[in-house]
Every structure is written in structure tokens, then in C-alpha cells.
Amino acid sequence: MAAAGAVRETAAMIAGMRPALQPGTWSFVTLGPDDPRLSQALATMREPEGLSVILPAGDDDPLPMAHILLQVTSALDGVGLTAAVSTALAAADIPCNVVAGHHHDHIFVPQSQANAALRILERRAAE
Image 1: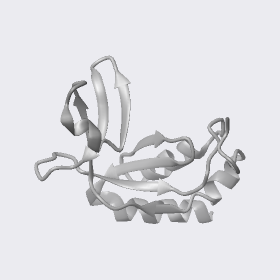
Image 2: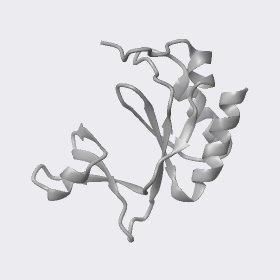
Image 3: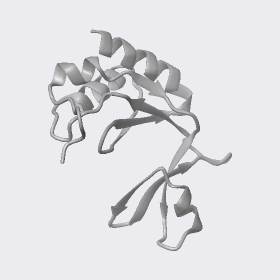
Image 4: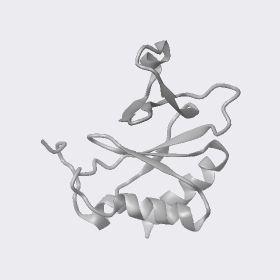
């Protein structure tokens, strides 16, 4: 079932994305099934190598990530939002990892580039 009020049209998804920097700094790691840190996971994905999770970053994390929430309720079968976001960030040499939830898309970028990424996404939405 699609999320209520989900936006499917490409231009409307992009225009309505309203990117918002979320609190915290995050780390992508692989955990074993009994790891107690699993309860802290923001998101998980089962992969052949193990359970990939997004956890609060520690002080020694080599690549702390910022979380940008795209506030548009994007349809799971909508086309183009991920491409628009990743293309805009790639043009500025900002890597991103996209995680799609049922209601929203979540963009993870290096913490050091979070403010620049947010400005780029705001400009892209306004185009």
C-alpha cells in the first residue's frame, strides 16, 4: 500500500523535497545478529556479508555521516527523485547514500559536507 498522499510525479517530488538536516551523526557498519548495538540502529539492510546498520557515530568513526531527510512523501514507485538528488550532489563532488523509507527518502552525506549538500538540495528543489 502506498503512503497516504504520496507524490509520484518527478517534478513534484523534486520541488517538494524540502530537505532538512536531522540531528546526530551516523555511521554505516556491519553487525552480527546478537550485537547489542542493534537496538540503536536507525536503519538496517541484510546483505550477504552480514547485517548493515546505520548507528550513531562514535568519536573514532572514519567517515561520520549527516542525515538529510527529504520531507516529501515520495511514492515507492515514483521515478527520478534519487537520480536528481545524487546527480546534484555528484556535480559538487559530494558523495551520498540514499535510504528509502515507506514515506520519505533519507540522504546520508559526509558530516563535513552536510551544509553544502543541504544548500544544493534546496537550490535543486527551487529550480
